Amino acid sequence: MADGDVLVDIEHTLQDGTRIRLFAVESSDYPGGVNYRFHYYDPATGDSLLRYDNSRVPTHGAGHHHRHEWVAGEEEVTALEFEDLDSHLAAFETEVKHYEQ
Image 1 (cartoon, rainbow, N blue to C red):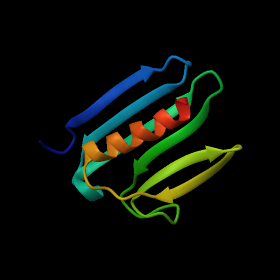
Image 2: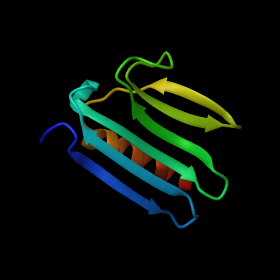
Image 3: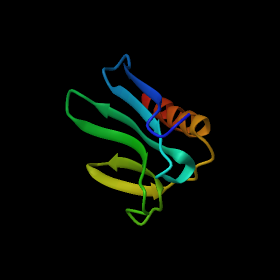
Image 4: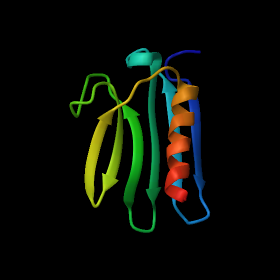
């Protein structure tokens, strides 16, 4: 694989109308060699519910890999450990399942 190769590019709508957008591209500019954004949101309201993403430099006081969650309209950002893309995707999907319950 090479920089710019798309590793994941998926969007799907859940039964309640919320959506998941998963995107990752190989990039040697990013820690872990991947630039990614996993987003769970409500297209009807435009509200974001949960997002995992990363940055080239530490941001939000949460390092390179971070989790955004919106609680009562307020964004909370926390650091995430990044082992590999597959583990990260699985962790995100597990969190989304908790929202659906």
